[in-house]
Length: 521
Image (cartoon, rainbow, N blue to C red; front, side, top):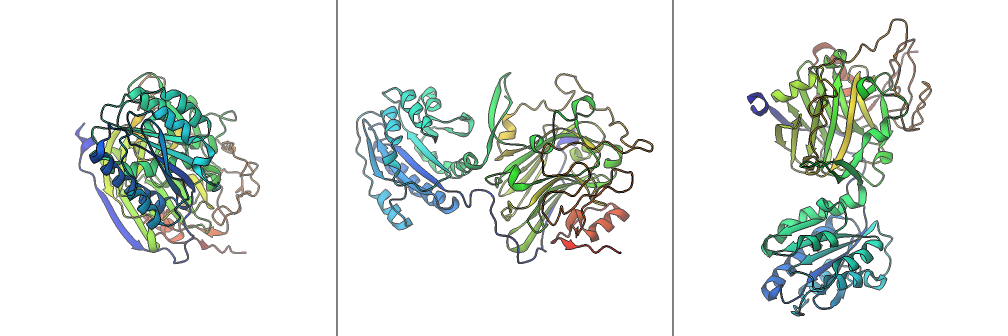
Protein backbone atom coordinates (compact mmCIF):
# COMPACT_ATOMS: atom_id res chain seq x y z
CA UNK A 1 0.00 0.00 0.00
CA UNK A 2 2.89 2.36 0.68
CA UNK A 3 3.82 2.18 -2.99
CA UNK A 4 0.81 4.34 -3.75
CA UNK A 5 2.27 7.12 -1.67
CA UNK A 6 5.94 6.57 -2.38
CA UNK A 7 8.25 9.33 -3.42
CA UNK A 8 7.44 10.63 -6.87
CA UNK A 9 10.22 10.84 -9.39
CA UNK A 10 9.31 13.75 -11.63
CA UNK A 11 11.79 15.51 -13.82
CA UNK A 12 11.03 18.89 -15.30
CA UNK A 13 13.04 20.59 -17.97
CA UNK A 14 12.57 23.51 -20.32
CA UNK A 15 14.19 23.30 -23.73
CA UNK A 16 14.30 26.06 -26.33
CA UNK A 17 13.01 24.01 -29.24
CA UNK A 18 9.98 25.36 -31.03
CA UNK A 19 10.35 27.68 -33.96
CA UNK A 20 9.71 31.39 -33.54
CA UNK A 21 6.81 31.40 -36.01
CA UNK A 22 4.47 29.54 -33.68
CA UNK A 23 0.77 30.18 -34.26
CA UNK A 24 -1.00 32.85 -32.26
CA UNK A 25 -2.68 31.51 -29.13
CA UNK A 26 -6.44 31.20 -29.26
CA UNK A 27 -7.42 28.83 -26.45
CA UNK A 28 -8.88 29.62 -23.07
CA UNK A 29 -10.74 32.92 -22.81
CA UNK A 30 -8.17 35.24 -24.32
CA UNK A 31 -10.47 36.06 -27.23
CA UNK A 32 -13.86 35.81 -25.51
CA UNK A 33 -16.17 38.77 -25.02
CA UNK A 34 -18.32 39.17 -21.94
CA UNK A 35 -20.56 41.81 -20.44
CA UNK A 36 -20.34 41.48 -16.66
CA UNK A 37 -22.49 43.22 -14.05
CA UNK A 38 -21.35 43.16 -10.42
CA UNK A 39 -24.24 43.51 -7.95
CA UNK A 40 -22.81 44.71 -4.64
CA UNK A 41 -24.78 44.62 -1.39
CA UNK A 42 -25.10 48.20 -0.13
CA UNK A 43 -27.57 47.50 2.66
CA UNK A 44 -26.99 48.39 6.30
CA UNK A 45 -25.85 44.81 6.95
CA UNK A 46 -22.72 45.38 4.84
CA UNK A 47 -21.61 48.40 6.87
CA UNK A 48 -19.26 51.17 5.79
CA UNK A 49 -16.09 49.22 6.57
CA UNK A 50 -17.32 46.12 4.78
CA UNK A 51 -18.44 48.14 1.77
CA UNK A 52 -15.01 49.78 1.50
CA UNK A 53 -13.32 46.35 1.49
CA UNK A 54 -15.80 45.05 -1.06
CA UNK A 55 -15.19 48.08 -3.28
CA UNK A 56 -11.43 47.39 -3.23
CA UNK A 57 -12.19 43.83 -4.27
CA UNK A 58 -14.35 45.07 -7.17
CA UNK A 59 -11.36 47.15 -8.34
CA UNK A 60 -9.11 44.10 -8.29
CA UNK A 61 -11.70 41.85 -9.92
CA UNK A 62 -12.49 44.23 -12.78
CA UNK A 63 -8.79 44.66 -13.49
CA UNK A 64 -8.30 40.90 -13.67
CA UNK A 65 -11.41 40.26 -15.79
CA UNK A 66 -10.71 42.95 -18.37
CA UNK A 67 -7.07 41.87 -18.63
CA UNK A 68 -7.72 38.14 -19.06
CA UNK A 69 -11.01 38.00 -20.96
CA UNK A 70 -10.34 39.89 -24.16
CA UNK A 71 -12.92 42.60 -24.84
CA UNK A 72 -14.84 42.06 -21.62
CA UNK A 73 -16.83 45.02 -20.30
CA UNK A 74 -17.82 45.51 -16.66
CA UNK A 75 -20.73 47.37 -15.03
CA UNK A 76 -21.66 47.97 -11.39
CA UNK A 77 -24.97 47.97 -9.48
CA UNK A 78 -25.41 48.48 -5.74
CA UNK A 79 -28.55 47.38 -3.95
CA UNK A 80 -30.32 47.58 -0.63
CA UNK A 81 -34.02 48.25 -0.44
CA UNK A 82 -33.74 49.34 -4.10
CA UNK A 83 -31.11 48.89 -6.83
CA UNK A 84 -28.84 51.70 -8.06
CA UNK A 85 -27.07 51.55 -11.44
CA UNK A 86 -23.57 53.01 -10.99
CA UNK A 87 -22.44 52.43 -14.59
CA UNK A 88 -23.28 50.06 -17.44
CA UNK A 89 -20.86 47.63 -19.10
CA UNK A 90 -18.90 49.56 -21.70
CA UNK A 91 -19.68 52.98 -20.23
CA UNK A 92 -16.03 53.34 -19.21
CA UNK A 93 -13.77 52.21 -22.03
CA UNK A 94 -10.42 52.78 -20.33
CA UNK A 95 -9.19 51.24 -17.09
CA UNK A 96 -8.52 54.63 -15.51
CA UNK A 97 -12.09 55.85 -15.94
CA UNK A 98 -13.46 52.49 -14.82
CA UNK A 99 -11.43 52.50 -11.61
CA UNK A 100 -12.28 56.11 -10.84
CA UNK A 101 -15.99 55.31 -11.13
CA UNK A 102 -15.62 52.39 -8.73
CA UNK A 103 -13.70 54.47 -6.18
CA UNK A 104 -16.40 57.16 -6.28
CA UNK A 105 -19.15 54.65 -5.48
CA UNK A 106 -20.65 55.59 -2.09
CA UNK A 107 -22.09 53.41 0.63
CA UNK A 108 -25.74 54.37 1.12
CA UNK A 109 -26.69 51.97 3.92
CA UNK A 110 -29.96 51.55 2.09
CA UNK A 111 -32.08 49.66 4.63
CA UNK A 112 -32.45 45.89 4.24
CA UNK A 113 -31.44 43.92 1.15
CA UNK A 114 -34.01 43.02 -1.50
CA UNK A 115 -32.02 40.77 -3.81
CA UNK A 116 -34.97 39.57 -5.88
CA UNK A 117 -35.82 43.14 -6.80
CA UNK A 118 -32.20 43.80 -7.81
CA UNK A 119 -32.14 40.69 -10.03
CA UNK A 120 -35.28 41.77 -11.86
CA UNK A 121 -33.72 45.21 -12.33
CA UNK A 122 -30.57 43.90 -14.03
CA UNK A 123 -32.65 41.67 -16.34
CA UNK A 124 -33.68 44.83 -18.19
CA UNK A 125 -31.85 45.53 -21.44
CA UNK A 126 -31.04 49.18 -20.68
CA UNK A 127 -29.01 48.21 -17.61
CA UNK A 128 -26.53 46.38 -19.86
CA UNK A 129 -26.04 49.27 -22.27
CA UNK A 130 -25.49 48.92 -26.04
CA UNK A 131 -24.99 45.42 -27.42
CA UNK A 132 -21.38 44.28 -27.69
CA UNK A 133 -21.84 41.08 -29.73
CA UNK A 134 -20.71 39.27 -26.59
CA UNK A 135 -20.18 35.60 -25.93
CA UNK A 136 -22.41 35.94 -22.88
CA UNK A 137 -23.75 38.07 -20.08
CA UNK A 138 -22.67 37.43 -16.51
CA UNK A 139 -23.97 38.74 -13.18
CA UNK A 140 -21.92 38.42 -9.97
CA UNK A 141 -24.14 38.94 -6.91
CA UNK A 142 -22.44 39.69 -3.57
CA UNK A 143 -24.83 39.25 -0.61
CA UNK A 144 -24.02 40.20 2.99
CA UNK A 145 -27.40 39.41 4.54
CA UNK A 146 -30.66 37.55 4.06
CA UNK A 147 -32.82 38.98 1.30
CA UNK A 148 -36.16 40.34 2.49
CA UNK A 149 -38.04 39.51 -0.73
CA UNK A 150 -38.62 36.45 -2.90
CA UNK A 151 -35.22 35.76 -4.43
CA UNK A 152 -36.53 32.98 -6.66
CA UNK A 153 -38.86 35.28 -8.60
CA UNK A 154 -36.10 37.69 -9.59
CA UNK A 155 -33.64 34.88 -10.27
CA UNK A 156 -36.02 33.17 -12.70
CA UNK A 157 -36.42 36.40 -14.66
CA UNK A 158 -32.65 36.88 -14.88
CA UNK A 159 -31.95 33.26 -15.81
CA UNK A 160 -34.64 33.40 -18.50
CA UNK A 161 -32.85 36.42 -19.97
CA UNK A 162 -29.83 34.19 -20.63
CA UNK A 163 -27.59 35.64 -17.92
CA UNK A 164 -25.11 33.41 -16.10
CA UNK A 165 -25.37 34.23 -12.40
CA UNK A 166 -22.77 33.75 -9.66
CA UNK A 167 -23.74 34.07 -6.00
CA UNK A 168 -21.27 35.05 -3.27
CA UNK A 169 -22.59 34.86 0.29
CA UNK A 170 -20.79 36.54 3.19
CA UNK A 171 -21.53 35.45 6.74
CA UNK A 172 -24.94 33.98 7.50
CA UNK A 173 -26.68 34.36 4.13
CA UNK A 174 -29.10 31.39 3.78
CA UNK A 175 -27.81 28.68 1.49
CA UNK A 176 -31.22 28.25 -0.14
CA UNK A 177 -31.14 31.90 -1.26
CA UNK A 178 -27.65 31.52 -2.74
CA UNK A 179 -28.76 28.41 -4.64
CA UNK A 180 -31.84 30.21 -5.91
CA UNK A 181 -29.76 33.13 -7.20
CA UNK A 182 -27.03 31.10 -8.92
CA UNK A 183 -27.00 29.29 -12.24
CA UNK A 184 -26.38 25.55 -12.45
CA UNK A 185 -24.22 23.66 -11.84
CA UNK A 186 -24.22 25.20 -8.36
CA UNK A 187 -20.79 23.76 -7.60
CA UNK A 188 -19.34 26.25 -10.10
CA UNK A 189 -21.54 29.24 -9.30
CA UNK A 190 -21.93 29.49 -5.51
CA UNK A 191 -19.36 30.63 -2.95
CA UNK A 192 -19.84 31.08 0.78
CA UNK A 193 -17.37 33.18 2.78
CA UNK A 194 -17.14 33.49 6.55
CA UNK A 195 -16.00 37.09 6.36
CA UNK A 196 -15.56 39.82 3.80
CA UNK A 197 -11.78 39.68 4.08
CA UNK A 198 -11.86 36.43 2.10
CA UNK A 199 -13.17 38.14 -1.04
CA UNK A 200 -9.71 38.56 -2.68
CA UNK A 201 -9.38 34.77 -2.86
CA UNK A 202 -12.30 34.66 -5.30
CA UNK A 203 -10.66 36.68 -8.07
CA UNK A 204 -8.92 33.78 -9.81
CA UNK A 205 -11.81 31.38 -9.17
CA UNK A 206 -14.28 33.75 -10.81
CA UNK A 207 -11.95 34.31 -13.77
CA UNK A 208 -11.85 30.57 -14.40
CA UNK A 209 -15.55 29.96 -13.86
CA UNK A 210 -16.57 32.73 -16.25
CA UNK A 211 -14.22 31.23 -18.81
CA UNK A 212 -15.70 27.76 -18.33
CA UNK A 213 -19.25 29.03 -18.72
CA UNK A 214 -18.24 30.51 -22.07
CA UNK A 215 -16.40 27.52 -23.53
CA UNK A 216 -17.33 24.33 -21.64
CA UNK A 217 -20.29 21.98 -21.76
CA UNK A 218 -22.22 20.50 -18.82
CA UNK A 219 -21.56 16.83 -18.10
CA UNK A 220 -23.61 14.62 -15.81
CA UNK A 221 -21.48 12.45 -13.49
CA UNK A 222 -22.07 10.36 -10.37
CA UNK A 223 -22.03 12.45 -7.22
CA UNK A 224 -19.01 11.73 -5.02
CA UNK A 225 -20.81 11.37 -1.69
CA UNK A 226 -24.21 10.09 -2.68
CA UNK A 227 -26.32 8.11 -5.13
CA UNK A 228 -27.36 11.13 -7.18
CA UNK A 229 -26.03 12.86 -10.27
CA UNK A 230 -24.00 16.06 -10.49
CA UNK A 231 -23.42 18.56 -13.29
CA UNK A 232 -19.83 19.62 -13.91
CA UNK A 233 -18.20 21.52 -16.76
CA UNK A 234 -16.17 19.59 -19.31
CA UNK A 235 -16.12 17.63 -22.57
CA UNK A 236 -16.95 13.97 -23.21
CA UNK A 237 -14.32 12.93 -25.74
CA UNK A 238 -16.00 9.55 -26.19
CA UNK A 239 -18.84 11.32 -27.99
CA UNK A 240 -16.42 12.84 -30.51
CA UNK A 241 -14.19 9.85 -31.25
CA UNK A 242 -16.40 6.76 -30.79
CA UNK A 243 -19.73 5.73 -32.27
CA UNK A 244 -21.55 3.89 -29.49
CA UNK A 245 -24.08 2.32 -31.83
CA UNK A 246 -21.49 1.11 -34.31
CA UNK A 247 -19.31 -1.09 -32.16
CA UNK A 248 -18.52 -2.01 -28.60
CA UNK A 249 -15.53 -4.02 -27.57
CA UNK A 250 -15.26 -6.77 -24.95
CA UNK A 251 -17.27 -6.16 -21.78
CA UNK A 252 -18.57 -2.88 -23.15
CA UNK A 253 -15.23 -1.19 -23.74
CA UNK A 254 -14.53 0.81 -26.88
CA UNK A 255 -11.36 -0.40 -28.61
CA UNK A 256 -8.75 1.56 -30.52
CA UNK A 257 -7.06 -0.48 -33.23
CA UNK A 258 -6.09 0.01 -36.84
CA UNK A 259 -7.31 3.47 -37.75
CA UNK A 260 -5.89 6.26 -35.58
CA UNK A 261 -8.56 8.44 -34.02
CA UNK A 262 -8.32 12.06 -35.11
CA UNK A 263 -10.59 15.08 -34.99
CA UNK A 264 -10.27 18.79 -35.63
CA UNK A 265 -9.56 20.60 -32.38
CA UNK A 266 -12.23 23.21 -33.02
CA UNK A 267 -14.91 20.52 -33.41
CA UNK A 268 -14.06 19.09 -30.01
CA UNK A 269 -13.64 22.50 -28.34
CA UNK A 270 -15.84 24.87 -30.41
CA UNK A 271 -15.18 27.93 -28.23
CA UNK A 272 -11.72 27.07 -27.01
CA UNK A 273 -9.90 24.68 -24.72
CA UNK A 274 -9.63 25.56 -21.02
CA UNK A 275 -6.21 26.62 -19.76
CA UNK A 276 -6.62 24.43 -16.67
CA UNK A 277 -8.15 20.97 -16.98
CA UNK A 278 -8.19 17.36 -15.86
CA UNK A 279 -7.92 14.59 -18.43
CA UNK A 280 -9.82 11.57 -17.07
CA UNK A 281 -9.68 8.20 -18.78
CA UNK A 282 -10.42 4.58 -17.90
CA UNK A 283 -8.59 2.12 -20.14
CA UNK A 284 -6.57 -1.06 -20.45
CA UNK A 285 -3.75 -1.91 -22.84
CA UNK A 286 -3.04 -5.02 -24.87
CA UNK A 287 0.25 -6.83 -24.34
CA UNK A 288 1.61 -5.30 -27.54
CA UNK A 289 0.74 -1.78 -26.43
CA UNK A 290 2.27 -2.31 -22.98
CA UNK A 291 5.65 -2.90 -24.62
CA UNK A 292 5.67 0.32 -26.63
CA UNK A 293 5.67 4.10 -26.32
CA UNK A 294 2.42 5.76 -27.32
CA UNK A 295 0.45 8.94 -27.10
CA UNK A 296 -2.65 8.62 -25.00
CA UNK A 297 -3.66 12.12 -26.16
CA UNK A 298 -1.92 14.65 -28.39
CA UNK A 299 -2.94 18.08 -29.67
CA UNK A 300 -1.20 19.46 -32.76
CA UNK A 301 -1.42 23.01 -34.08
CA UNK A 302 -2.28 24.02 -37.64
CA UNK A 303 1.32 23.37 -38.75
CA UNK A 304 1.57 19.93 -37.19
CA UNK A 305 3.54 21.17 -34.18
CA UNK A 306 2.77 19.30 -30.93
CA UNK A 307 1.21 21.62 -28.35
CA UNK A 308 0.18 19.40 -25.44
CA UNK A 309 0.28 15.65 -24.97
CA UNK A 310 0.31 12.72 -22.55
CA UNK A 311 2.75 9.97 -23.55
CA UNK A 312 3.10 6.48 -21.98
CA UNK A 313 6.32 4.45 -22.10
CA UNK A 314 5.73 0.75 -21.49
CA UNK A 315 9.37 -0.31 -21.25
CA UNK A 316 10.26 2.37 -18.70
CA UNK A 317 6.87 2.35 -16.96
CA UNK A 318 6.75 6.13 -17.37
CA UNK A 319 4.22 8.83 -18.05
CA UNK A 320 5.38 11.99 -19.81
CA UNK A 321 3.47 15.25 -20.04
CA UNK A 322 4.61 17.49 -22.88
CA UNK A 323 3.55 21.05 -23.60
CA UNK A 324 4.65 24.03 -25.65
CA UNK A 325 5.83 26.85 -23.42
CA UNK A 326 5.88 30.55 -24.05
CA UNK A 327 8.51 32.12 -26.33
CA UNK A 328 9.29 28.82 -28.04
CA UNK A 329 10.22 26.86 -24.92
CA UNK A 330 9.15 23.26 -24.44
CA UNK A 331 8.09 21.67 -21.17
CA UNK A 332 8.51 18.00 -20.36
CA UNK A 333 7.51 16.38 -17.06
CA UNK A 334 8.21 12.66 -16.55
CA UNK A 335 6.72 10.54 -13.77
CA UNK A 336 7.99 7.17 -12.56
CA UNK A 337 5.78 7.10 -9.49
CA UNK A 338 5.10 3.48 -8.44
CA UNK A 339 1.41 3.93 -9.22
CA UNK A 340 2.20 4.69 -12.87
CA UNK A 341 3.62 1.19 -13.36
CA UNK A 342 0.20 -0.27 -12.56
CA UNK A 343 -1.16 1.20 -15.79
CA UNK A 344 0.89 -1.39 -17.70
CA UNK A 345 -0.38 -4.57 -15.97
CA UNK A 346 -3.09 -5.25 -18.56
CA UNK A 347 -5.99 -4.45 -16.26
CA UNK A 348 -8.50 -1.63 -16.22
CA UNK A 349 -7.26 1.59 -14.63
CA UNK A 350 -8.47 5.14 -14.14
CA UNK A 351 -5.91 7.85 -14.87
CA UNK A 352 -6.36 11.52 -14.00
CA UNK A 353 -3.92 14.11 -15.36
CA UNK A 354 -4.62 17.52 -13.83
CA UNK A 355 -2.93 20.52 -15.44
CA UNK A 356 -3.09 23.98 -13.86
CA UNK A 357 -1.13 27.11 -14.68
CA UNK A 358 1.37 26.16 -11.99
CA UNK A 359 1.29 22.40 -11.48
CA UNK A 360 0.89 18.95 -12.99
CA UNK A 361 -0.66 16.34 -10.69
CA UNK A 362 -1.53 12.70 -11.33
CA UNK A 363 -3.91 10.13 -9.87
CA UNK A 364 -4.11 6.44 -10.67
CA UNK A 365 -7.20 4.54 -9.55
CA UNK A 366 -8.26 7.51 -7.41
CA UNK A 367 -5.02 7.64 -5.44
CA UNK A 368 -2.35 10.38 -5.69
CA UNK A 369 0.55 9.60 -8.01
CA UNK A 370 2.70 12.70 -7.60
CA UNK A 371 2.80 16.32 -8.66
CA UNK A 372 5.27 18.71 -10.26
CA UNK A 373 5.48 22.50 -10.74
CA UNK A 374 4.91 23.80 -14.27
CA UNK A 375 5.94 27.05 -15.89
CA UNK A 376 3.75 29.10 -18.20
CA UNK A 377 2.33 27.26 -21.19
CA UNK A 378 1.46 28.65 -24.59
CA UNK A 379 -2.19 28.86 -25.56
CA UNK A 380 -3.51 26.06 -27.75
CA UNK A 381 -4.12 26.83 -31.42
CA UNK A 382 -7.70 25.76 -32.11
CA UNK A 383 -7.13 25.24 -35.86
CA UNK A 384 -5.15 22.04 -35.34
CA UNK A 385 -6.07 18.42 -34.69
CA UNK A 386 -6.42 16.05 -31.72
CA UNK A 387 -5.11 12.48 -31.87
CA UNK A 388 -5.90 9.62 -29.48
CA UNK A 389 -4.01 6.36 -29.04
CA UNK A 390 -1.04 6.73 -31.42
CA UNK A 391 2.09 4.56 -31.31
CA UNK A 392 5.39 6.45 -31.46
CA UNK A 393 7.40 4.09 -33.62
CA UNK A 394 5.11 3.93 -36.67
CA UNK A 395 2.22 6.30 -35.87
CA UNK A 396 -0.35 3.51 -36.06
CA UNK A 397 -3.17 3.12 -33.58
CA UNK A 398 -2.58 1.32 -30.30
CA UNK A 399 -4.49 -1.77 -29.22
CA UNK A 400 -6.40 -0.63 -26.15
CA UNK A 401 -9.92 -0.52 -24.73
CA UNK A 402 -11.46 2.65 -23.30
CA UNK A 403 -14.47 2.98 -21.01
CA UNK A 404 -14.09 6.69 -20.31
CA UNK A 405 -12.27 9.57 -21.96
CA UNK A 406 -13.18 13.06 -20.79
CA UNK A 407 -11.64 16.46 -20.22
CA UNK A 408 -13.01 18.33 -17.20
CA UNK A 409 -12.67 22.10 -17.10
CA UNK A 410 -10.61 23.30 -14.15
CA UNK A 411 -8.69 21.33 -11.55
CA UNK A 412 -11.47 20.58 -9.04
CA UNK A 413 -14.22 18.89 -11.03
CA UNK A 414 -12.66 15.43 -11.12
CA UNK A 415 -12.67 15.42 -7.32
CA UNK A 416 -16.44 15.98 -7.29
CA UNK A 417 -17.13 12.78 -9.20
CA UNK A 418 -17.58 9.44 -7.47
CA UNK A 419 -14.47 7.48 -8.34
CA UNK A 420 -16.13 4.20 -9.25
CA UNK A 421 -15.27 4.25 -12.92
CA UNK A 422 -12.69 1.47 -12.52
CA UNK A 423 -14.47 -1.74 -13.59
CA UNK A 424 -14.76 -4.30 -10.83
CA UNK A 425 -14.00 -1.82 -8.07
CA UNK A 426 -17.63 -0.94 -7.30
CA UNK A 427 -20.11 -3.36 -8.79
CA UNK A 428 -17.94 -6.29 -9.80
CA UNK A 429 -19.31 -6.24 -13.35
CA UNK A 430 -15.86 -6.37 -14.92
CA UNK A 431 -12.65 -7.95 -13.76
CA UNK A 432 -9.58 -5.75 -13.97
CA UNK A 433 -7.24 -8.68 -14.62
CA UNK A 434 -8.96 -9.88 -17.80
CA UNK A 435 -6.57 -9.41 -20.75
CA UNK A 436 -7.63 -7.82 -24.00
CA UNK A 437 -8.40 -10.56 -26.55
CA UNK A 438 -5.83 -11.04 -29.30
CA UNK A 439 -6.80 -8.61 -32.04
CA UNK A 440 -4.60 -10.07 -34.81
CA UNK A 441 -6.49 -12.77 -36.74
CA UNK A 442 -4.75 -15.07 -39.20
CA UNK A 443 -5.09 -13.82 -42.76
CA UNK A 444 -7.67 -11.22 -41.81
CA UNK A 445 -7.74 -7.57 -41.06
CA UNK A 446 -8.30 -6.34 -37.57
CA UNK A 447 -11.71 -4.71 -37.40
CA UNK A 448 -11.33 -0.96 -37.08
CA UNK A 449 -13.58 1.10 -34.87
CA UNK A 450 -16.00 3.38 -36.73
CA UNK A 451 -15.59 6.99 -35.68
CA UNK A 452 -18.67 8.98 -34.76
CA UNK A 453 -17.15 11.97 -36.49
CA UNK A 454 -17.46 12.38 -40.24
CA UNK A 455 -13.94 13.80 -40.37
CA UNK A 456 -12.32 10.58 -41.55
CA UNK A 457 -13.18 8.29 -44.44
CA UNK A 458 -13.49 4.95 -42.65
CA UNK A 459 -13.16 2.96 -45.88
CA UNK A 460 -9.42 3.56 -45.84
CA UNK A 461 -9.65 6.46 -48.28
CA UNK A 462 -8.00 9.84 -47.80
CA UNK A 463 -8.83 11.69 -44.60
CA UNK A 464 -11.01 14.73 -45.05
CA UNK A 465 -9.12 16.64 -42.35
CA UNK A 466 -6.88 19.07 -44.18
CA UNK A 467 -3.93 19.15 -41.83
CA UNK A 468 -0.17 18.59 -42.14
CA UNK A 469 -0.26 15.95 -39.40
CA UNK A 470 -3.23 14.10 -40.87
CA UNK A 471 -2.92 14.50 -44.61
CA UNK A 472 -3.81 10.98 -45.74
CA UNK A 473 -4.64 7.56 -44.29
CA UNK A 474 -3.63 4.60 -46.43
CA UNK A 475 -4.28 0.86 -46.20
CA UNK A 476 -1.02 -1.03 -46.08
CA UNK A 477 -1.33 -4.47 -47.72
CA UNK A 478 -3.75 -6.65 -45.71
CA UNK A 479 -3.01 -5.38 -42.25
CA UNK A 480 -4.64 -2.73 -40.14
CA UNK A 481 -1.56 -0.52 -40.21
CA UNK A 482 -2.30 3.08 -41.14
CA UNK A 483 0.00 6.06 -41.05
CA UNK A 484 0.23 9.77 -41.65
CA UNK A 485 1.84 10.60 -44.97
CA UNK A 486 3.67 13.77 -45.88
CA UNK A 487 4.95 14.72 -42.43
CA UNK A 488 7.22 13.32 -39.79
CA UNK A 489 5.92 14.51 -36.43
CA UNK A 490 8.66 15.44 -34.02
CA UNK A 491 8.52 14.79 -30.30
CA UNK A 492 7.19 11.36 -29.31
CA UNK A 493 6.11 10.78 -32.93
CA UNK A 494 9.14 12.40 -34.54
CA UNK A 495 11.70 10.77 -36.77
CA UNK A 496 14.71 11.07 -34.47
CA UNK A 497 12.76 10.13 -31.39
CA UNK A 498 10.97 7.31 -33.19
CA UNK A 499 14.34 5.82 -34.19
CA UNK A 500 15.44 6.12 -30.59
CA UNK A 501 12.23 4.48 -29.43
CA UNK A 502 12.70 1.54 -31.79
CA UNK A 503 16.17 0.82 -30.43
CA UNK A 504 15.94 1.70 -26.76
CA UNK A 505 12.30 2.37 -25.85
CA UNK A 506 13.50 5.60 -24.24
CA UNK A 507 11.04 8.46 -23.80
CA UNK A 508 11.27 11.46 -26.09
CA UNK A 509 12.86 14.69 -24.96
CA UNK A 510 13.29 16.81 -28.09
CA UNK A 511 10.10 18.14 -29.55
CA UNK A 512 10.07 20.54 -32.47
CA UNK A 513 7.97 21.41 -35.49
CA UNK A 514 6.69 18.87 -37.96
CA UNK A 515 9.16 18.16 -40.74
CA UNK A 516 8.28 17.08 -44.31
CA UNK A 517 8.90 13.42 -44.95
CA UNK A 518 10.21 12.51 -48.40
CA UNK A 519 9.23 9.14 -49.80
CA UNK A 520 11.43 7.22 -52.20
CA UNK A 521 9.95 6.72 -55.61
